[in-house]
Image (tube, rainbow, N blue to C red; front, side, top):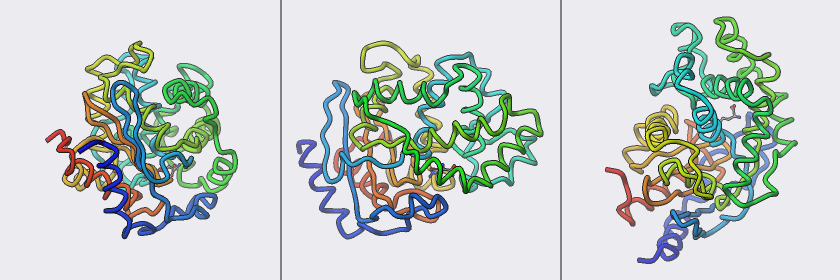
Length: 303
Ligand code: DON
């Protein structure tokens, strides 16, 4: 079956699920999104993209940005990040505080909010304008110069950021924050508020399918580093649902509360899905179902 046929079939298969789940309402600007939307795009190693449904509609990247900030930090440093962030699944909600005290301010992994805040702090130390660096990368890889921060979403999250502020201050109290808390939080929120479409995201994530090589042929990550980022996506990318995601979908994936999921078939392609309705753990109900169909129909699970 051709890929566009596969995607067309998936749009039909998930039609009854459209609108299922709840849109994220703890960021008020996201609560207004029409939950019935669904898009899917697949980019192959040659940079060709096939899409179906609402695959060109921009949405809020939210936690999917954490994959890119992690990759940028690893690209610009030795392995020192791992002295301040772990690499084990948390088994807890993405915004949980409970493990931080027992574990002396070292977040379990770079994809829970605490870990991503530490990664953003690290990126600020490396480059200063962390969000600018991330936007430059996303624009170059997607070929979309118009990618930008949605200022309304950023402002909305910034005024409802008590928990992330608490997490950041808590890490600072353990000496695990190198820049001012307000700066780190501002940069983190802005990174999460970048708007992308499934098309943009599939292209931007392609380096992870291409063993770390960017679209222009240059190397962002070594293939060993790319393997590691994919592994952390598989084990931690969907938080306390990572086991279920691996069971159903069988490839690395990273979700965001905007309803997007970026998934990678190493050596073959990247897939971006989007549908705003979330399950209780913050993952897109229809998006995960679509990825489940995708790996079943293509046989492209890593297992
Ligand atoms: O920090 C937050 O809570 C949001 N900006 C991002 C959370 C998120 O996307 C979790 N993903 N499922």
